[in-house]
Image (cartoon, rainbow, N blue to C red):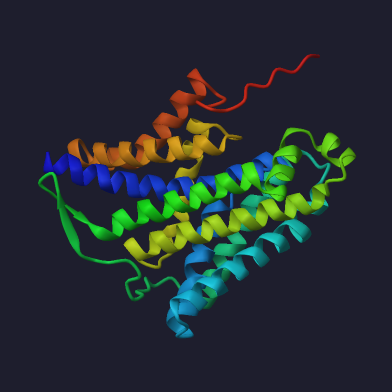
Amino acid sequence: MSTFVSLTVYGMADGAILALAALGFVLIYKATSVINFAQGEFLLVGAYTFYAAFVLLGLPIVLASLVGVLFAVGLGIVVERFVLRPLIGESPISVIMVTIGLSAVLRAVVQMFFGTAVRQQPAILPRDSIKIFGGQVPLNRLFVIAIAAFVLTAFTVFFRRSRHGIAMRAVADDQQAALTMGISVRRIFAMAWALAAVSALIAGVLLADVSAVEQNIASFGLIVFPVVILGGLDSVPGTIVGGLTIGLLKQYVSGYADPGLAEVIPYIVLVLILMVRPYGIFGETRIERV
């Protein structure tokens, strides 16, 4: 029982971070129909930006967080304006290749400024443990779950209640209709990339705090693809279900079976979902008449 509790908490924490990373992926895809292969590097840049502000510059955690958010928003807007906007109307494969190139550039820039060595930063979340149903559970993992739940709830309320959130949903449903209603599609595109970068920043900072500030953070972003395929490429609730499912599955397989198998199980799930339900659990099935 104690092992099951520990694996469940660890899996939910990993799943919460995955959901935050996948949220940014889905935001970009829903608003712009772009598959962003640089989402993992957005996590990496976010983690190192916070590290630079918090550790290297010695700013208080609140100011360091503000610096990270402002940098993330700026990065998202710059990428959309100068990298993706000129590609409007180009073939999907061209856009995909550009996002792959963007991922390599972002990783190279981080390595140029910070090197490849693992960096340590002071703990942000508590390092104590508590006992739940006989299992020792670290508090930082519980805080990760709580923070991710708060952020995902805030994003959900933003999409459903705020004027800008409703405009983003309108653009995602029908860009031409949104234009006729006076909505600036280009502004919504920029907002989608900015919000995706912010969600990646939060995911990267949380991941760095429970592990370390290192280049492997970008590799964690690769698991975003099984998450969004499972939940649905265009579904925000699907990111939560997909993230928790993949996070728990990895921990259970690692704890009860083989850690090596746990590294590939998300991609096995990806292949199975593509074979059985290619639009995901919550994805919208699109039927085109020709």
